[in-house]
Length: 124
View 1 (cartoon, rainbow, N blue to C red):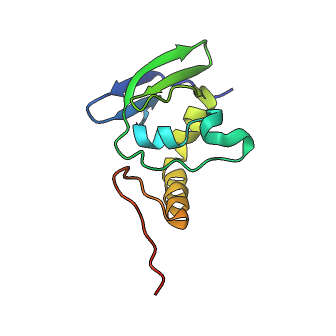
View 2: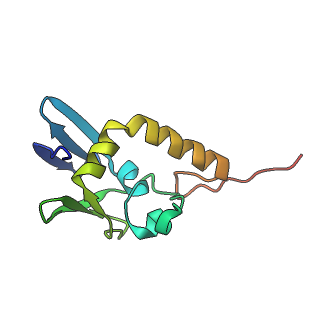
């Protein structure tokens, strides 16, 4: 059985979602949640699709999905992923590792977190 947060707080100004599990609090940035969305659009039916340009994305709302998940609605229009309690706990507890992997994947693909930035590789 996955832990269910004892408190869930949406902070629109700082673009974060805070989850509390007992004495432990986790602050998850909207960008982190957006690029790790469990939706088919992001997960690509088993082959994840690298999300780029999500630096400024925020959360517009959160909604309960039964007793097992949250529906996160992002201000870029994405709202199709259901974040189960198990997945939210995994994201919270593995945030540093998952973020490092994401940044490495972006670098390897020559992509950017900033939607206003294009990465160009020069062959010298």
